Amino acid sequence: MKYNDEKKYIGNRSQLLRAMRVQLQEGKAKGVEMVDVQNSSGMHFDINLSRGMDIPFLDFEGQNFGFLSPCGIVAPQYFDDKELGFLKSFTCGFLTTCGLKMAGAPCEYEGQSYGLHGNASHTPAEEVTCILCEDEEVPYIRITGKIRDAIIFGDKLVLEREIKCYYKERKISVRDKVINEGYKKARHMIVYHCNLGYPLLSDNSEIFIPSTSVRARNAHAQEGIDVWMKVENPNPDYEEMCYYHDMKKDENNMSTAAIFNPDLNMGVAIEFDTDSLDHFVQWKMMGAGDYVMGLEPANATIDGMKDAVENKSMKYIEPGEYIEHYLNFYVLSNEEEMKQIKEKFN
Image 1 (cartoon, one colour):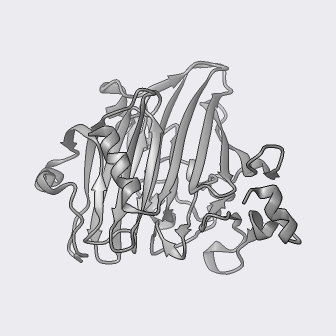
Image 2 (cartoon, rainbow, N blue to C red):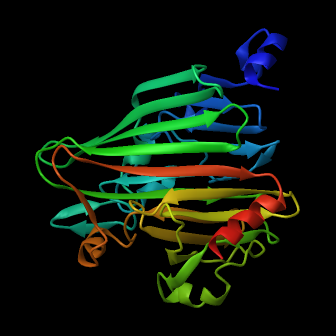
């Protein structure tokens, strides 16, 4: 049944498609503003307006897909931008945006200290809009806002984010436009830290990363490179491992990574534009209580600003210019959908 026909059966369109502004009230999450979104596909997610318009929660038919860290939802005023202080308020969630000037390991470069993963994910959005659009045959929710990463005497970047979710589609679309509002060329690093967790992630889950080559980030990760695609049981002594993947792409220069759990008959696929996101990082953390698989489209390496400059993966934006990044997140509801993704890249 089409949307306009279904409307005859309802009193309020929120029965079919809704986006509600909410504010959390307790603990370190007090004051955090979010948009709670649900459509008629069985998909539900939240957008954290207080924290970079990231997506802490994604679930489908009651099953959780993302990993929520022990600190949970934390308001931006608790952010510690020194060294590894980021981890004290790292929600993880389904999506954390790392950047805009710096993403990856803490470092010092040109006399300036940079903490882990930059400021974007701890910056409240401004000029937020949340609209249910019914002007097309298929209605959709459109949430927009701006994240400002600017400083006097330094780089002045603004992220314009648009998130769309259609009526019955198991899909979330993200379009980011990063603008240099300054008058000097600016460095730009970004990592889309997508974090998959239990119950989607279990020792029976299948990881699909269609890469032509895989490189361990360090010597420790090299020890596990032969099983980078294997999900293991939770181990309290596990030490994280990270891998760089050179991704295959389709005729439109898009690539896709996915995870599927046959026990749930569910999965999620992350599609991204390799023209701007030309790096891909896999974060494998099989720790007890820290059980997460990160599938992370990026535009540079993640071993510090100096390393990215020296290996020429660093990106730059000229004054008044911008770069756009496109991602789509798909909920997979059966094994055939996972099979189709694999056949596309194999």
